[in-house]
Amino acid sequence: MNSRAKEIAVIAALAAFMAVVSPWSIPLPGSDVGFSLATFAVYLVGGLTDKWRGAACIAVYIMLGILGLPVFMGGTAGVGMLAGPRGGFIIGYLAAAAVIPFCKKILPKKTAFTLLAMAAGAVCIFIMGTVWFMISTGRGLPEALTICVLPFIPFDIIKIILAAQLVKRLEKTNILQGFISA
Image 1 (cartoon, rainbow, N blue to C red):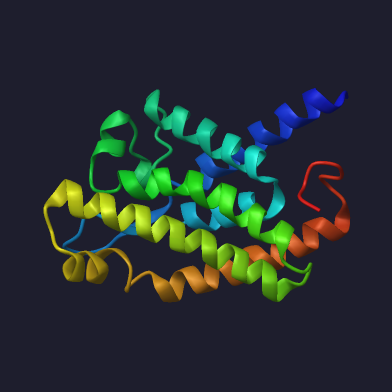
Image 2 (cartoon, rainbow, N blue to C red; image 1 turned 90 degrees about the horizontal axis):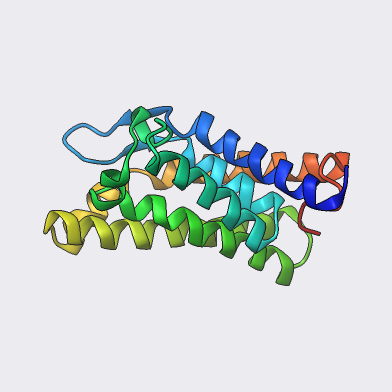
């Protein structure tokens, strides 16, 4: 398989992974946001790719959702999801998928620094998601942080740890040799 075809195949496979795991979610009672495996997938994609390939994977995932495939949290779809209270989180995935590999590239190649890179990606998601949540709902920062950030930090720490460990294992297997970030 030539290198361009391999790139397209890996981008498609990672976007498909995003599409499969992202709908699995638990709504947060009384909120328009919830616990989702999407961020785990974003951390993994960002940890395995360089910044443009990771962003390409997320862009394909977002396009699938816009086109009507039920790939967003709770099996939802459509452009309305991007305009709604959760839209900033979905767009934040793009930023995270670029920030994580950028950080991995400039930091030492150790698991602790992979964790930091993924944490930087989480910050991107939280900032973009919280700002958009505030704009779309008219809620203030303290309430938005209480709804959109604080309940999710412990779960994102767990997802980051698991994703970093999986990235390290996959890097050792060379399963994506020539494609994953080095």
